[in-house]
Length: 398
Image 1: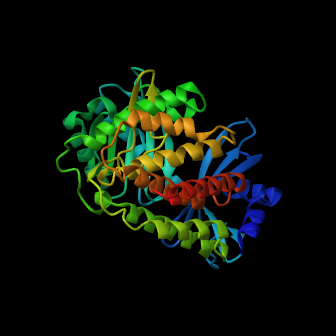
Image 2: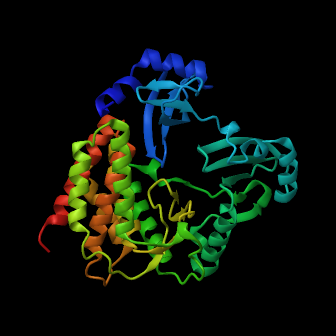
Image 3: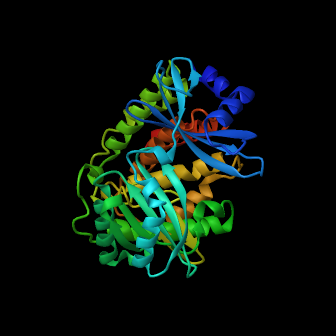
């Protein structure tokens, strides 16, 4: 099944809505939107937003897996099939236990106020989830659930960063609950920077976020690297991940989309010489939905992938997400002023090759995002145009 026919099947609205309402607790969905497609080793995660009768949008998680004759209640995609991921049946995460009233009482004693309500705030199949806890004293907390063995690393990383002069930029971890592989985080003020798009507030927030990122990059943080997830990352590593995404998408579609092949080939030709850089701390997944903006203050979220490596990875990823934000909002904004605001906030860098490495990181992050949104035609076209444009600048004579 090629790209166009896969989209056609998923956008066969009457048929898909009928399956969605019969199979998943969509709340009488009357419409839906295809969102991110995330390539995994043996399957794909697919995010879909459903619109219920009350006019509320709800994010839902699915998997696309090779078709078999043994999976009940799947939606056929030819040689593949779509399966709903019920978070309460996820054996890798302790979601059900985290929502249980027994844990409410234990958490209430820990937090100093009775937990009166809990809800699933976000969910990534088999990988992580966030539970929101509302306490009687009006305070909210977030419990983040990790895969086995990851919660200890997460809280240790947060504590190392906070002790290294970065406390003002980070959410406070309150406790780790080993039985649930959960870390409890205090809720920070402000709203996500992505919500400030577009305009002056977005540009100002980008400047503040860039200054905070520079502090993270330059801080003296001992013991930040612990395990393969936080190893020393290079632009070559980023390209390998993007190339694997392209290959996996090609497997699903039955062919390699020409735009992805073109951008991937150009990146391969540009990678030489980008293996020399000054090792810095990395956020690891830096974009405008990882930044809380509260007037003149920013807080950085989700440092689960924090490690060491080329700082151009973080900077390039943020620039790519400016292009993504424009594509997501279907806006006609020029990305250059936003990019200039961010780079101005980051400050001067003595490394002469830094800006070329940033351009490469920008392009490779765009390529990865092209794969993530290959099932959303307008967004996909916008991102591939941005990737080509960035690669043209990278190919210009030095």
